[in-house]
Image 1: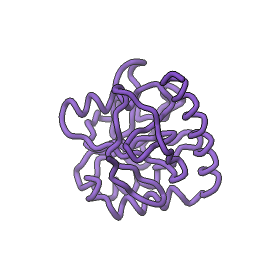
Image 2: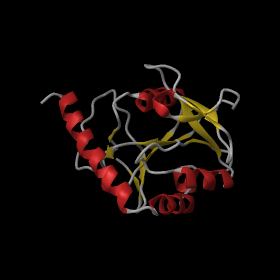
Image 3: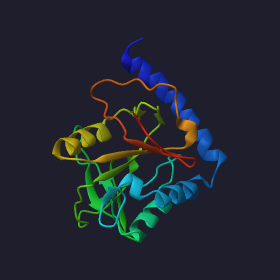
Image 4: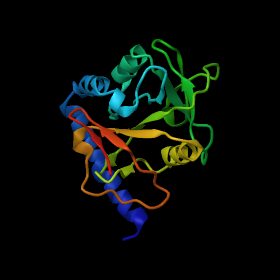
Length: 193
């Protein structure tokens, strides 16, 4: 089996797990927000730090309660903007109540008047993760390219955001796949190896 075939199979399993977890616990986003806020300093989420989040789609872990908490803690919160198919993401500042525009793939993103932000912490959506720090998404590579760029420019922390049920024994990866530093779920926050 090729790496691409293996990733396709893992994506299907991980997507199924995420759908089930999303349906099983509607309180998970609040639990996640409370857990991360209680351990914010451990993750580098301190006053003035720029953190990218994401506006949830479908059955992704909803980080909107966490975004509001982080804004209240004094973090500069931003959302991703897709600027091109094979390019890293750009991030624009978000504040509670800010109007969002429709973006590529149905994403909700700040409009072009919102200031650009270079985040020090990325909250990364995913389909599945393992304890080695590997993640699998939909395969477009936006976060891998973005993490590679930001890591090349200096220190950045990648925190995978997931339901605990999205943990897999092993996620196939190669040298194009950028690892996570942490995983945060409704149950725990774990430093990954």
